[in-house]
Length: 415
Image 1 (cartoon, rainbow, N blue to C red):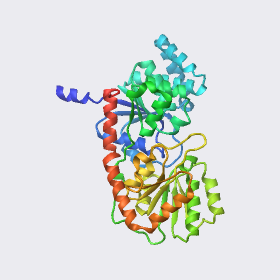
Image 2: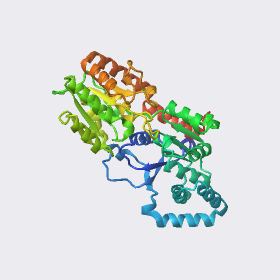
Image 3: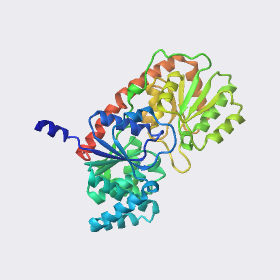
C-alpha cells in the first residue's frame, strides 16, 4: 500500500490559470489539459473571466478538472472578503505583494492582484503544488501574485499577442524573472523573449510546441473528392494578423484566371463585415463563403473535404503576429496541403516545398500562384500532404508536448 501512496504523490495537483474557460479559439489549451489528465495529472482550472456565449467543443466534456471562476464581475463580494482575510492573516506578505502590484500604476494589474488574493483563499483550503498560466496577460499576473502570496511556484506559456502587443515590457520581464520556468510555443518567440525582454533568463525559457491530439484529425488517403469545385479552406479568427484580406485578393486573381474553386472561411471576428464587403466588391460572392465560428467536430469535417488550406498570416502595424497557428497544424495533420507565410514561428512548422508552401506575407499575387499550382497538381498535393502528416506525428503530437510540460512542472527549470 505504501508504494501506491508514494507513486500517487509523484504527480501533485496542478492549478491551471486561463483567461476564459472554455474558449473556442484556444483549442490548444483544451488539448493540453485533456492530455495531462490522461497522464494521471490532477488539475484544477481557474478562469480569470466568465465564458461568453460562443459554441463549445464537445471535447470539453472529457475534462475532469473542477473549474473555478475568479471574475470580479460575478464574485466581487467573495474577492473582497478573501483579500481582507488575507491582509489580516498575512499582513507583511500581503502588503509587500500589494505594493508590487501598485508599482506598475495600472488599474488592470491591481485588479489581477485582488483576483490572486481570492485564488490564494481557495488554495489555502485545497492546495496545489504548482500553478501554470496560459498567456502572459491576466492569467500570468494572477499566478505571479498568487505565487508571491503563497510561495507556490508558477510557470506560464507565452503565445503571441500577449508577448508582442498586450503586455508592457517591464511586466513581462517581471513575470519571466519571478517564474520557475517559462514556456513559449516557438523558437522564434523564445529568441525574442531572451533578446528583447529578459536576456538574463536564458536557462529558464523553453520552446515547447503546442501539441495536437492526432486522434482528432483523421488522415485518409486517397481523399474523398467532393463533386463540385475544389475547396480552399481557411480556419481563423477574423482579425488582422491572419491576413484573410490577402486570401480574398488571391481568390480574385484565381477567378480572373478562370480557375474553378470555392473558398470556405471558418471563424468569427471583428473583420467579418469588412471582409464580406471586399468579397462582394470583387464579385466573389458565389465562391467565397463565411461560415462563422464552429466547434472542433465541424472544423475536422471541413479539413476532410478541403483540397488546399490557406492561412496567409501577416505582421500587423501594432506588432501583432501569430505564434504557430493551430489551424495550420490541424490542416497538416488532416492531410490537407497547406499554404502559409514566412512569419514568426511558421517556418519552424513547415519546410517550403517539402511539407507545405510558404509565401511572403502581404503578397496576394504569390499566394494566388501557390494556390493555383496546388489546385493544378494532385501529385504535388499528395506529396506535401503525406510529408506534412509525418512531420506533425514526429514533432507536434500532444503526447510529446505534454510529456515535456510535465517534466518542467515537476523538475523546475529543467536546465
